[in-house]
Length: 331
Image (tube, rainbow, N blue to C red):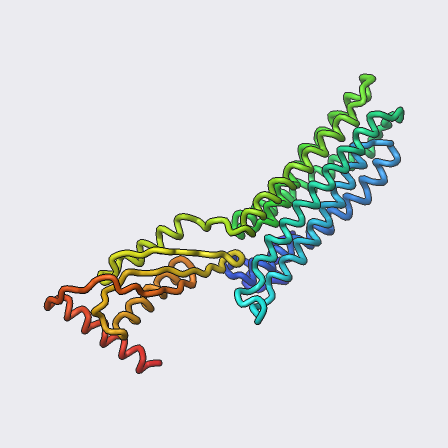
């Protein structure tokens, strides 16, 4: 179903590396999640209140929180698509992580409330009255959550979106929790135990944990978490591959949304190179880094040593100078 909708509404929907396509896919998955979770909320609340099941009612409200999460994911993906402006020169890509942070807080709040509700149910005298229709609704809920789980797992692997990760983890826990509710219903039917309330407590814990994980992950990103060390290694390797640069320092790389990297570095270059040649060397390095890592790198030149001129070195410098002049003539 999702592939059909993506093909119909998103141009070049399989090009995951394109930021616009990536955010459109996140938006579409959010809309699908909203529709499915709203259907589950309606049926679970009806069945939960009619059977006096704390666990099913909690599960229904959990799906309501999932709906809100999907709405927030939709808003976050839309805001992330806004282009750079005067106040936000690097764009709005980090809004995705900001929304993920808020989603984590919301999930933790819902988990805490469900925990309190389950304890209150345990302290009460009401008995759960499970029916066949209640079991059917829960089984269909598990099927729906399996679909949401596999959809968002695939998108998370292709898009590396914290929002899809949060939805995926939440769906996985919903599957385990709803299965526990069914098992608890069967046990409560044959034994005089308030298993339903216990399952409500377990469900509350399942809800709280992914919220905490998402909160920690989003907080680390917004606080300036280090980018992938492999990118730093690749950048350093490209810089040092140039014969006229003997070292570098103060490499800083910042991520402003997935696929948007900005950075700066100081390179140690020969002081007796002409400005034209030095500029050409640095520009070529910047282009190569951009092509291989998607990083926009600003390079500051530190003249730290003098070249010992030889016929080979002078020939290489002359070659670079001719290329630089040709570049400027083309420009």
